[in-house]
Picture 1 (cartoon, rainbow, N blue to C red):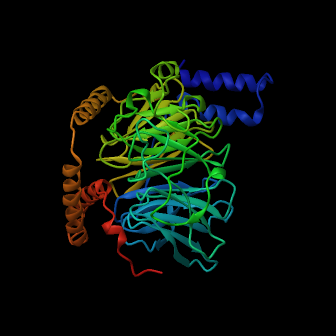
Picture 2 (picture 1 turned 90 degrees about the vertical axis):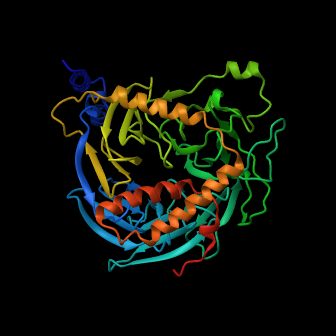
Picture 3 (picture 1 turned 45 degrees about the horizontal axis):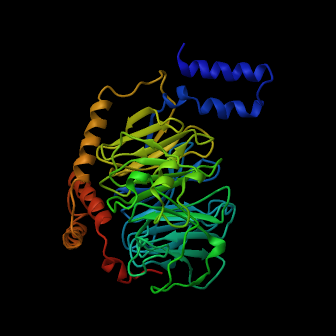
Length: 477
């Protein structure tokens, strides 16, 4: 008997014998390995004219919102796969994040993008959408974090190193919650002359005062928002000290990697961290370095427990997210530069499913809030939906070992390359010029050429780091 069938039979037997609560059986079966191994492509949502960068389900799981390089925001009815609404976001450049504000009947949507703007879209009773700019960062804004259970408050993080606090009830400008800068070797204070370009932000659902951020160094920082002071947004601000920091021991003080994605588990406040051209790690609370990772003795480092690691994928070309899957976060999932979706068991790190999700790169994966169902997006212009529709328990692809080995070799080859700051800045300037050239002719080329152009523009846009492109004003409300 297949393991998935055995798991389902066992759960039904426990329910019938009174050993488990009837309400929990569907959640337990949906998290069984046999169900996950039946995940297969269910359908595609077509409509965007650029790379799709952002996805989120509403709280009931029947509506999906997406954002794209075409700067359009689209809402999808997942019951029939139809597009129910499309509106211009008001962003001048690529949209990187779309989120529903909770308890607003799915009528309030926040967005952020490459232009540094944080915007609000309000769906009116007549079906029209009013958008306005709530604030902006100096640099790209990849991620937003809505405060769980609050219909008004959310946070943004930007390449300028700031985390901003928004209250949509207020007509005033956003306030700065904290500022991240690198740690200084040999002391417990931050180095104020530079900043951490923030890529990701996540709120602990079990303690919403705790907020984790990650960016252009190897550390995931956790802050207690009760310990920071709200202040007007300012470029000259004293860096805030985190309450905890997380990093695998072998990456500590290497300055060779950076964080691209963060996610908190719902049940136990575990922190999932994905690194650029490295691996994915799961940290428990007791695995942190405290407020500063410097000055820790070698003996103490050796005593610390190592995080769970997830291997096989590659995260080099884009700023990829990372996420949990399952009603109780039983699995970890990530996209990859090889175009595959990787799903691992959270405990033990066993790879249980690998699916081809994009011809080029899979960037973002979003899990349904209640069932084993996920949405993916990448360089292609559509959203893909994945459900356990296969009649068979699917094994890993025959070539998965070769794919994983290729990812490993590429990652290790890249790790040997050392670039000086001068070379990096020259490379970034070249990338910015190429991005401008691509933008001018994006809609002139044929559809096939447009796909290739979108890929190059998307990747180069994520690599570029200067703030010049986001400093210019846009003629939007």
